[in-house]
Length: 377
Ligand SMILES: Cc1ncc(COP(=O)(O)O)c(C=O)c1O
Image 1 (cartoon, rainbow, N blue to C red):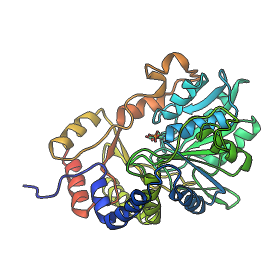
Image 2 (spheres, rainbow, N blue to C red):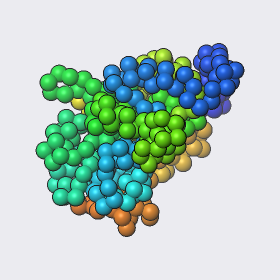
Image 3 (tube, rainbow, N blue to C red):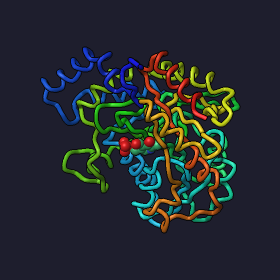
């Protein structure tokens, strides 16, 4: 009989209990000050994240979806413009394009990294294409060198969706190394509680090196105003709460330690799955580090759903990120342009399974998960 504590996909409680004295103190300070909106912690957090990512401007906002949408607005994209997005992704990138009256152009992903296949982007470009949203999925960066070069050839904007990969870096052939989210014209990220850098509610940010764009994005996020009650552009209300900023300031200090913990957990899984007959461990791209937001395996031979059931019956949670490619989603299907069949994305949707992965994993839990996987035939 197993005596382990219940296995979690993402052990938010365990992490909180470890940081509790610091988090509680930071929250208490906000409560006592009552500066719930635009308190000093918001600016302090933006400065600290800007330092961590080595990017001049970080503009905190309400959530990652808003960050993507405001990036489109800030770059001046218009209804009818085409935006290239990956077929296999969390839906926010496609959703904001469609919501803004633009056309999502769906491009297939790389079977190894699950990120948008840069070799396919160029052939998808039309005279109406204005931007690419490169989603850094599951913890590693897209091939930003190839994407950036292609984007400048075609004068396209590059927006990076870095919600799942804060902390990952991308290396370039000239030897430079840059954080995901700081390479394109605008980076967008989310601080949703399960993300690598996460608060205890909704939160997000935009990143840019362009001072004018930074000022515009800042305005858009605050009702289009710089000076109170003077609305210069049409904006929205998308602010990071002071309480969330205070929590994020504590979490940011542990970012590297958290990344290391997930990498060590991934290393163990990788070793154990190395010679598995029908499971492929995640592949790390040579140009990116991996922060393992998710540890997503491919289960071949039609065995994915059976394995998920088998694990569930033995107390092991797992998730299917994601069950449907973007072009097959009911909401987006009529609005997308799909230049070529996205067959890799379709295969992934049938085969992927994300295993428990977080900063609090124990050797005992991981051993049990792998022994159970190996006992499934
Ligand atoms: C890749 C990606 N982009 C965008 C988002 C949207 O972020 P939010 O939930 O903060 O709006 C998420 C997260 O949920 C995500 O995983």
